[in-house]
Length: 299
Image (tube, rainbow, N blue to C red):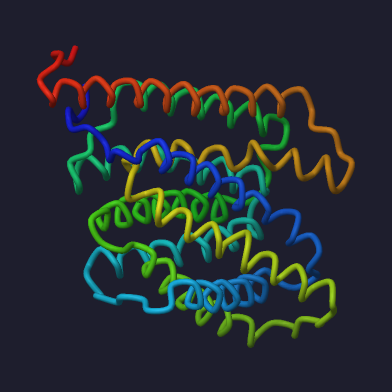
């Protein structure tokens, strides 16, 4: 089942880079709790810091303004902005859970747009991750609003487009898409912030914003752009499902809150799904590589 094409020879390192991306993404909750600003002010400041940081690292970005580069930038910015709105309009659990329908959308879009058909292990991995998400947030789901839930679902669709458009640039330089995305987010969120109460500048808030911009989204964007060149979009978004697994760790370390049994069980299921899927895919790719050399026939 799926594509018979072997992945990039650096697929293992690419998967680790995407796992590290999920790790940095998961820092958002800890840093955001330190900033008593409206969400759009946080999004604007975070993206400004991230854009400056990434520009300094990249030094000479190559803007081609191709369809894939613009598509990835717009879909990424849309995801960040819609997720902020969803968190305000519905429960946080609903927002996260509904956004993580993204692996299913990514599998469909990958097959249609870039001819990367999900493998059997990816499909089974999606099912396991979905089960883990439900366990993770059981008891917290419900409430919110229909509009907020719909926006959360839409953010999952745009998140999927982001993965696919970034993967389209696997032979180019997708990192510029992330730089453009932060510029778009900063401008849009900044305009919205003009109509909201001005944020109070404190040393703690500035430190948290720097952490968000540099680590949580800046370093994460660089790792993501590097990793997605080496890993199919469907597997990439499956690895991204590790993000909520790390969240209870930060809550426990910084706030002393022990995660519940359901959260631990859900996190363990997600972690196992990602690890097993990645190992199965790696073994399949190794066999395909050997087959390409004429040493064995693929099964």
